Length: 430
Image 1: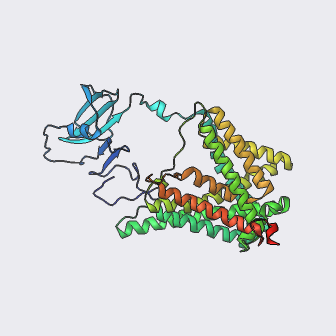
Image 2: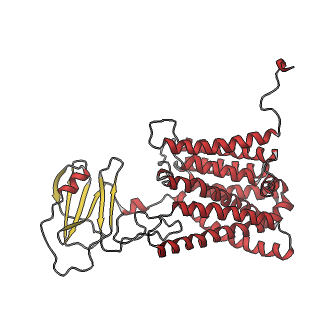
Image 3: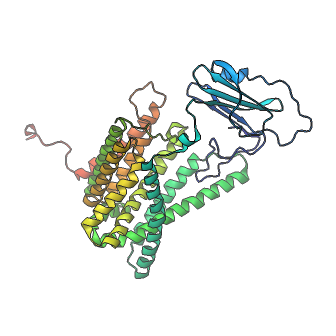
């Protein structure tokens, strides 16, 4: 991206992307290349007004050469350029692809490589399972906060809340979100733009932390009364008693469950008819983007875990039976997990069912802390590029991810020992 003005992302993370901020300023330019550096697309916003336009002959050979394509003939243009143009051309390539280009007042403003199977309907159509998962997720994003607000209001009136733990959890989410967003944002050189961007980051981060605080206030008294085991280790961590062996046990349990989920996720991707694995772009960027991902993911793990427990509490209020509550909650989580799978219908169904079972077992058997750790491990293992090939350009990122998980698992192992020796005592020691 290039612009005559300072660019500032307007979305929640304040990042300059391909279409953020929009291509609206005359002189803005965007260039897309593939992994080998070949030109894929070019887009330039022409001037809004020119009193004496210069109209020389436009030569697109430099762009075709940059794209490294061999054209077999010029054809009539079919595609509409996204900017104003007064000259258009199109070519067919030896590979069957199509090249469309346009100029404005003698200067190229658009160039695009169009694959043979390009079609708006095909590229925008999602699978029915993905649509079902998205619909369920949207429902949860609306219903769960509403339920949390109502329950929090009730609990605050009755004075049945652990305000200190809720406050500490909110501060943790505020800190990890705020630091992550600030690290990922592209900071403009203009002070006014920078001040506005940081102010928006603070507002967005405070809202996220406030909703986590509300959710904890809503579910903590109910879970403490109905399933107290879920909160033992997490409450000890929030109260500063993180050296407890029970904390280490739940950390290890969450890590083990996450590794199992990721293995199943990859296995379903290898099934016949699987779609490509999902890729998170942030860890492939600069150092601050990697720092953003490993930091913000901590808050995301907390949010996902609190959401899962809020779902259980909401279902329990409707069905009024513990076993049926866990069954219904597992089925709903399985539907939401369909969107996380990378295989076909069978693969997504297998992953959704297994993931929901693992999540419910971790919640019921170990508690909220195990779910938080498990969610963090899953997000890191699936989002960060992993390799043991030292020659890979992303080897450093892989070491970062593995080191973080190794340290967390090591801390959990040491804590779980409770001061005991890691190795059994041998007869030779007597």
